Length: 462
Image 1 (cartoon, rainbow, N blue to C red):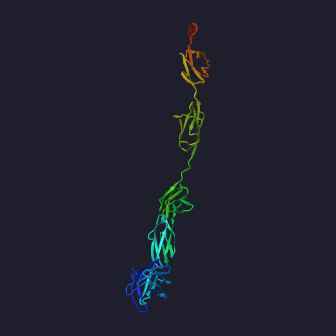
Image 2: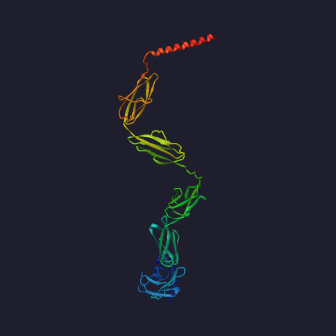
Image 3: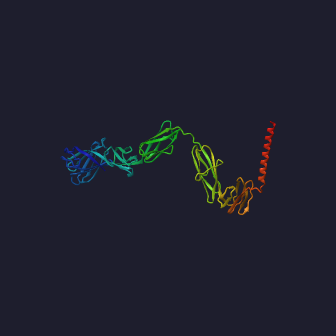
């Protein structure tokens, strides 16, 4: 039921015998003045007024009438008894008129009253969406009420209905007008959705799929930028979001959107770099070792590239060829410096063999090369060269006690598999008898005689 609220004034008292003026107190409902009646309770529900009339004995007949409608009725009184009084019409301003009088006891008292009907309106909303600041309110008949909600961040009012009156709403308020009965207002809420709009530096390109997107509260959106040649994203600023950042070269990620957001993407132009020239170095290794890196290695023009050559256990590096020519290694590495063409590098390896000592000695009168103590791989061969000094001649070459053949000053030791000792000896050239000296003196004498005879002939002719 709705309580009747406000100052209820008993405007006039009229009856068959007398007229009495009385005032009904707005707080107690008790009429003052000469009236023997008092109204202690007034309520309204679904078109009917409920009253309690006191001040008369039990069983007295209390009559009432609706003045403006000429409607009347009566009931048997009992102190504290709530009586339903039909109100077929409410005045335009939400008030009512009622006359009450005691018809049993002479009908000489009549109370005429005017009151305003107050209606109860309550509002409900899911707790997760927020709270209603004042969920229970009273309004006059045909009045209006506004409920204000403190919404949980990210939520908004999405709909509202009322059992009486007309409803309008905003994101956080609900207003009900034209209320003619007690009403319950049901408020629905939804997560907020925002507009995220992006702008890009003029001439820098465009957004794939458009520059405007929708984002639910707290979520993220992503823009893909199709950049024109020479442009790159250099800065991103955003409003009403946790962050706006570049991802990769052409994406912008906006996180934690909490209101309509504007994203500004700045792109700057830079002359494109000339195409990078690359060359290939083909690296390979034979059996017995590795080269690193291996295979086709791509190198920027003008850059350097180092390769490491490593022999496996039981092998040694035989040689390294760079572009077909033997190259020298530094600590097992070779470096191409300032590459300007395609190149090749290959490494070969030899299996390690047992080392054999060959000892070569020679006597005075000549030399042999190589000489001294020589270490060679088991099974290898080695050639030696003999040089004979003036006045000497080769005597013999002995290897491990056996004579070795010498051809054109060279001898060859083949398939050496054990320690080998070589001795080369020379001998001084010596004449066989003394006739040689005599012949020299005779020749000298003959030459002297010939000279004397030539001189004598020249003198005679003069």
